[in-house]
Length: 607
Ligand code: F6R
Image 1 (tube, rainbow, N blue to C red):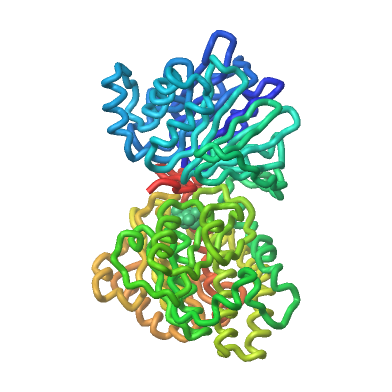
Image 2 (cartoon, helix red, strand yellow):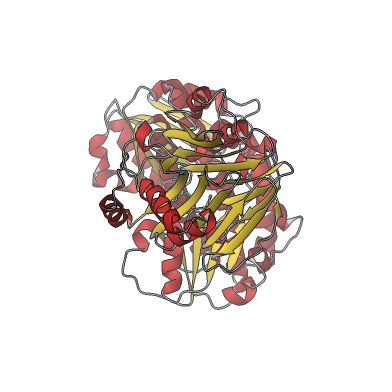
């Protein structure tokens, strides 16, 4: 959601800004802009639509210092006058996040004679910096005193044509990191934007303010205390964020799942037993008297939590609750200091999940675990225990490999908690670990079904609605399938536990309603078959994903695809793959923007 790139270097930085913005496109945006320190003052270029349009508009520009931004509209429509950077006097600013006190700032600044030309909250930051510079001419000091007045979340980057060569950045709540290069220094919302110039990254903390020039970087706290932050050498390869042979990032990421799972599961190696330490040094001690598990997450990550609930209760015998983070943070709940609070997030920056985690801690629940794909993210830093999924960068807005690697991590959690409670026999432990190790191969086999799934997708891509059914631990997989389909193909989709059909949704079923069913060969298959009969009897066309060894057969109006292996408790990890492929191919047929679906952002850093 919104992206920042800033550069101060010895050579022309315009292409660095543009390439950086392209790498941040996946975060979601509807307009883009840049501001450069040019000879005559600030040169600003803004465009609604894609970064490619900004690139055309900025061709011929040249500068050694500049800031750039992709905007995902919150305050004010996606329009050029609302696009960042915002300029006031000699300064320009780009901003991610939401300033909650912008209305009172706007009133105050309007009374001082500032004329607002946008509906954004960001413009008040620009005018406030300009007003502050009148009494405090040093840009660093002025930005620091402005930050002290801002309420809400922000990452900002500011330039001033009266103070050439300098960029001042600050963060509170929204992600921002610095890149230390040979020819210059840089800042961005995430590392992928800066890999083109450096691998040496410095992650800023909330309350940090920094100044960059081509040759120097200094960081202070907002109270003026100088701080040193460690330099991390990014392990991301530039190739990891390139599309390569694939048409879309989503397709690439679906096919990267065997590798992503293998990397995530490398931590168990060839061992026959599992150690609590894979969740952090303090895990054994902290998990010892856990009596309940509370999972907090949003969207796809909440579906991995819902699946894990079945594993945790069945294997470890510990009660588990899954709450949508945006609800939990505002709900009056009964705190339980003995419960383990698990925050699941691909990005680790999702505002609602982070706020829910903080809320849980504020209630005295300090046993916290982050399951996350980004090691330096806020959710990881604010949790006691951590498990980093090693899915690699997920660029497509629709989450795929992050989901399956979260599931693998959560299965490990179920095993560790079970073992701690004496609920896991050595034989079962070794068998589960073997199954996990075989997962990459099993997923690879499922991916070979793509051509048949693409044919199915063509059959129902012209439909307006679709119903997804699952039971037990595959109900969350049905939910995930419905979410994938609606977000990238814009086909309205709902998911139900199949037993709920006759309590309402059966009324929707007619010949125009494709019904997709996750039907593994498990203890609920016979029940599910009866539910499918109810659909077929009302004319609904069934698309059934079964296992190799199940007795379901195709007939008129009933299409059956068999997954190559029957995978027991871990079967949700295999059964979600065809649903990802189905949505992807339906979106291809519909011609939607698969990697950047309308109205959505990858990293939802505002409420
Ligand atoms: C759907 C999707 C979203 C995210 C949700 C949480 O495909 O990607 O539903 O799962 O916004 O994001 P994270 O996992 O980054 O907290």
